[in-house]
Amino acid sequence: MKNRLNRGRDDPTEETYEGFISGAYGGTCPVCGSNLLIYDAEHAEIKCLNCGTVIAEHLVDLGPEWRAFDEEQRERRTRVGAPTTLTIHDKGLSTDIDWKNKDATGKKLSLQRRLRAQRLRLWQRRVRVSDSFERSLAVALAEIDRIASMLELPRDISETASLICRIAMQNHIAKGRSIESLAAACVYAACRINKIPRTLDEISSASRVSKKDVGRSYRSLAKTVLNSVSKVPPANPIDYIPRLVNQLNLPGEVQTKAVEIINSAMNLGITSGKGPMGLAAAAVYLACVLLNFRKTQREIAQAAGITEVTVRNRYKELVEQLQFTIFL
Image (tube, rainbow, N blue to C red; front, side, top):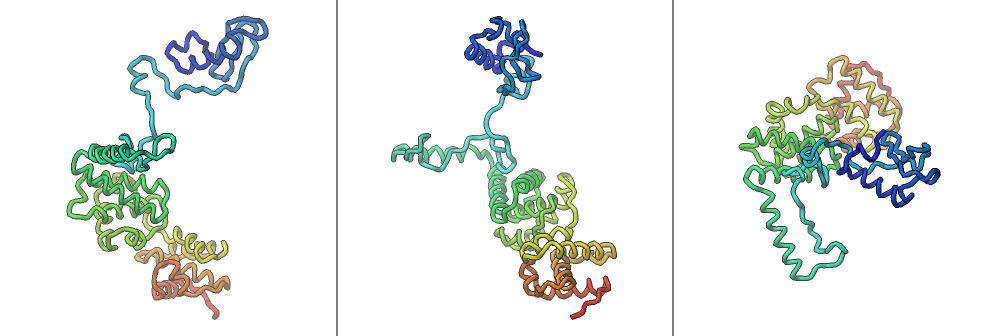
């Protein structure tokens, strides 16, 4: 239990409750008239020390969640503004001037103020970037944000990809490669780490570089950077099955059957060296055949973004190795 005397004179929470007590109750107990009121921080209550009456309860602590024992700690722990983020080259610590030419009340600025705001934006962009490293990092992080937005990826992917990109550029991995290919490779690595099914073709189509350049940059990341960030699991065909089933509007039993087929194939060791999307598409097609759902190889290949030949070859391998008997 803490009272007004032992919380400290500089405590903003104490000042808030002192004002609340004096304003609502005149600083006295409404039962006995005593002015020995005490704030119980553990139970969030204001009590009378004389008669024990609970004057107020369920109070919200408006103070910070940290404690400071001297002035130095108080100044160091005081913070304001939005949380830091890795998706901005300065981690969001600098000021960002809005592009809208409106004031705080929503009114449009005059011509003179618009020109002044434009000059401020120009100098603000110049001040935020101090050297060539920060300039390249800002371009790479902006490209990561653009690719993640086009693919509708969650915020965690952008944060993970930005962390990988920072480590790669600090270790000079980007030398000899375009920033766009490095950014795309970081997004692909973040998807692999967080087990979000995105193929290299999808990443390269959302970026401005070819699949070959993205793959080359990813191999460089895998050799140098990714081991220090997180272990990248191998691509699992099971991760692609729910996405295919959803795109083809198939019931859940098809997904369950396709997962059973992939698990059986993995136990026999016939999935190594095969593309995960091709195996997932073949398993979904085989599950449709076994459960009598009419889906052609062309429809499944278009949903998976691969060719019909790949679906047909993987399907034949699964049927032969798993010894299914298909009656057509």
